[in-house]
Amino acid sequence: MNPGRRTPTVAQEPTKEDEADAQAHQGPVASGRPWSGRNINFVTCNATVDATPLLKGLPNDQCHCPHSGYVIKGEVSYTVNGVEEIYKEGDAFYVPAGHTSGATAGAEIIQFSPSDLLAEVEATIMRNMQAMRG
Image (cartoon, rainbow, N blue to C red; front, side, top):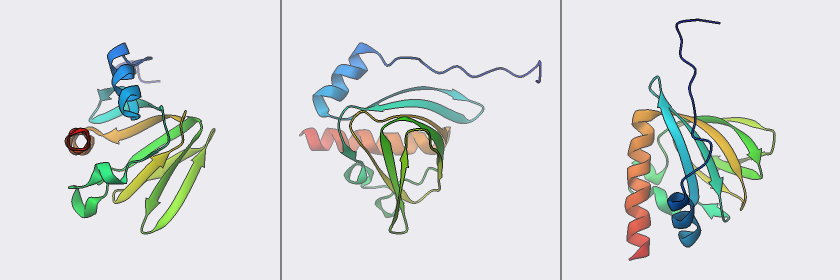
C-alpha cells in the first residue's frame, strides 16, 4: 500500500434529478468521479438500451473511448468490428475504442474510462438525446 496515494471515491447513488430524467427518457443513470485522468462511473440502466444511435457524430459513429469494468447486475454488450461480446453479472470486461454498446433493463456496472475521451463521448450522447427529444 502506498501511503501517499489517495483512494478514489465514487458517488454511491445518483441524484433524484438524475433518476427522474433517466426514467422519463428510459436512459441510463450514471454517477462517478474523476481520478488520476480516469473516470470511475457507476451506471444503472432503467430500460433495455442500444446506445448506437446516441453515438452518431463520433468517429465512425462509434465510441472512441476504451472502457474496463465489472458487471454488478444484468448484462451489457459491446460490439467491436462486427463481433458482439456479452458480459453478465460477475464478469469483468475491457472494450477498446471503436465500439457500440447496449444493456438490459436493470443492468448495473462499474466502469473505468479515460476522462478526456469520456467527456467527448458524453457531450455527443447528450446532443443526440436532446435532438431525439425534439
